[in-house]
Image (tube, rainbow, N blue to C red; front, side, top):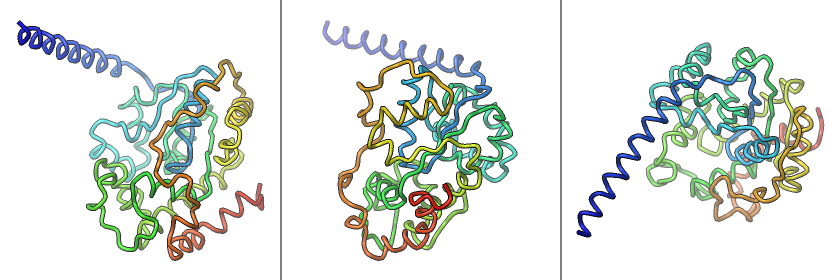
Length: 283
C-alpha cells in the first residue's frame, strides 16, 4: 500500500510538472517584448541584480534578470547576435518573454548599447558602476579563484565550468575582449563597460554601488525619482536580501586579496577611468 501511494504521488507530481511546463511554454510564446522598459546596464558583480530587484519592488514593477543568460539554446543563439549586432531586434522578438518585463537588467547590454538605444528610443537607461578592484575581486570570489593566481586553467574551477556564461566571459569568446590572463580580461571588460557610460552620460542615470551600499533605501529612492517613478512600496524588509551568492572573501580588502602583480594589473588598466568616476574629473 505504501509503495502504491508513493507511485501515485510520483505520477501526480510528474503530471503536474508536465502541465506546468506546457502552460509556461504557451505563456512565454505569446508574451511580447516591453515597448519602453527601464534598462539597467553594468559590469558583472557590480550590484545590478540587487538594484534592479529593489527598484522593481519599490516602484511596483516587474523585473527581468539576465535574459541573455536565460536564453534557450544560448550556445547557438547568442554567438550569431554578438557577431552581427544588427540581429539584436530579431533575437529579442524571438525571445520576447525574456524581454517582456517593466525593468530589464543584463550586464551584457554593455555590448549592445547603440542597438538598444535604437530599439528602445523611449526607454530610460541606468548604469551601475563599482570600483574595479572590488568588482573584479567579487568575480574571483564568486568563482572561487584565488587572488594570487598566475596561470588559469578553468578545468580546475568547477564554478567556471558549470555554466557556459562564466566560461565565455573569462575566455572572451563572444566579445573578443581578452587580455594576457583573466585579470587583464576582466579589467578590459570593466573599461569597455565604463566607456559605455562615459561616452553616453546624457542618456544614463548613474548609480555608484558604493553609494548604494551605504544607504540602500535612499539610493533606491533617489534612483526612482531620477527615473520619474513613484516609490510605492517599502523595501526595508528585503533590502539586505542576498540576491547573488556571497563569496568567502567578501570582507577582505582588494589589496589584501590580490597578489601585488594582479592588483597592479587592475590599476594599470582601470586606474585612469576609476579616478574619472570616483574623483569626479568628468562628472
